[in-house]
Image 1 (cartoon, rainbow, N blue to C red):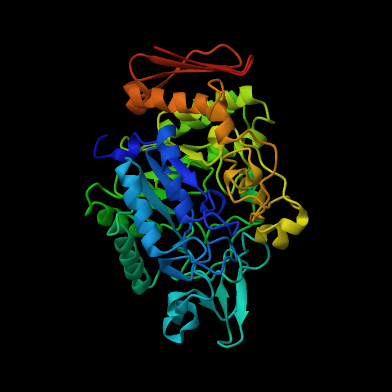
Image 2: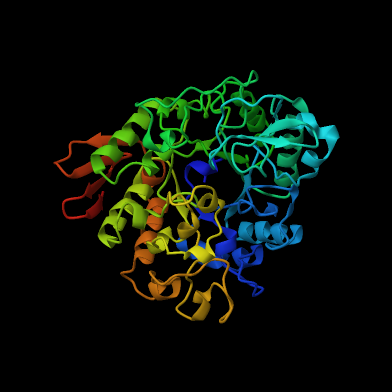
Length: 479
């Protein structure tokens, strides 16, 4: 693999709480991830990204951080994190963590310390900004007699990135983990970090906005994609280049405009990868998906590598959202993911064609269900535990232990699928192996080909042609 290792890697997203429980408390942990490294190596994975493992009160499943330099006790210890990184490295697997620079927990020492008040965004009279989780984005603090900004939960106050001390602190946080061998970060809310300094009102939604973007109820002109954010990522990229191998930054860039997405690559001096959510949030229509890919190929700088995913911890699983449980469709979707030019991310369970699992009302954990009742916005169904075996507890936890979310039953386990040469798991493994051994698929250019109606054909590199066919729901890779 070249020095730009992320360009040929297959990434795998781990949701640690739902991956493998080793201490019998019903919650997955870092030791569980470590014990499953052999499974990931067998699948052909080059790098894993773990959703937040840092200390947190868990108001938002770890995305409300109370200590950026320590591990959540439910998940393990710093020693467990070090052991995981080291053992993954012996298998040729790099480990990325999740970094949450937009906000902290309201129980973080910074927020409770008056000396750090200017590390957060305050106002004497709140503007019209809205929270992604519903309602006003401002909360009154009686002890200070002012309002603080929270783009998510009230217990997640937004940091003030106009303050150079905040910027310096986060560079120290990056160094802390890079020095421990962490290969990089997926950067949460990457385009939301800097807010308008004048706190101007956001304008109303417009008809041309993507439906997913309209859900906020206003156009986030002054809370998203401020031009100053690029200064931060240029600085971080310089820091990444101080290490060998170079550390990688993966942006959670919620855009439905590929030109705005392209800006987060810069001139190969900002993020190395940025998730393209326009593809993830499109209908499973080959003409629509082809248009997304080709517009992205046109918009991205020459040095940029596209970044694709079918599912993640915030988005309904592709088997449910796109395929309606039809494995033929799932095979076409997975073939697309693993043969397009770009870096693919599998979400744990994608390799099984795992569907969303029902979560009864009394078991819901996601604060979105409480904040926005009846809207179907909750993310628990795509976060349920991995089914490793057909035993009680599904191999995720010990028999008789109640897992933190129900395991469900609409699945075929890893154990069963590994034993079946024709399973979706083995199909996915074979695709990853083809990608690894075929230079066209791992590093070749993308060129669209004439395609009959209902199909999408493209050439990768010099000699490989991929055909996706939604008439018979078949996919072919020909050399």
